[in-house]
Length: 136
Length: 132
Image (cartoon, rainbow over all chains, first blue to last red; front, side, top):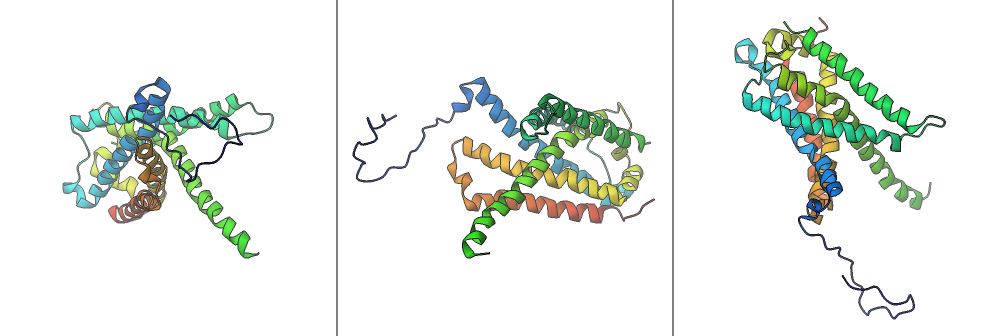
C-alpha cells in the first residue's frame, strides 16, 4: 500500500489515480466476522434453490392425480436440512437487525427485536397448523 | 417543478422501490421460509407428520384457494428481490466488481422479475380457482 502525501499542501500528481483497494480472494476466510458476513449473504443461494424446487412441486399439481408426486427422496430431505440451517441463520440475523432499523420513541430496541421473533414464532405455528391440518 | 428537481427525484424513487422489495423480501424469507422447509422438506417426506402436499387431492384443494395463490406468490416471488441483491453483492465481495454494473443489475433484478412472472403463471394455471 502506498503512503499518503505528507501534507495537504503537497503537489498533486500530474494524473489522477483511482484508489483500488487490494482484496485477495480468500479475505473472507481471515476473520470469523468476515466469514459469518459471507455466510449470511450466501443464505440467499440455498433458499432460492429450495423455493424453485417448491415451485416445481406446485406446478406438478397440474399433471392430474396420476401425474402428481411430491418431493420424497432422501436427497431432498438432506438438501432441506442444509437449507433449513441457512434459512434459520438468515432469520436470526435479519430479525435481529430490526432493533437497529426500527426506532419507536420510548420502546427499547430489545423489545422490537423480541416482537419480530414473536411474529416469526406465531407465523410458523399458524403455517405449520395449516400445512398439517389440511392434510389427510 | 423544475428540471433539476425531477432529475434528483428519479434515483431516489428507484431506490425506494428496490429497497422496499429487498427489505420486504428479507422479512418474508425470515418469517415464512424456515417452517415450510421444516414441514414440507423434512417432516413430510420422512412421514413424521401428514402434510397437505403429500397427496394430490388435499394439495389441489388448498392450491385452488385464491388466498393461498396470493400467499404463494408473496412467499416465492418477493424473497427473490432480496436474494438478487445479496447474490450480486456476494459476487462483488468475491472480487468481481462487474457485478455492480448496470447490465449485472438488469440480469439480477430482471431474474427476480422473471421468477415473479413464472410464479404468477404457475399459481394461476395449476389448480382452478375456487373458494371451496
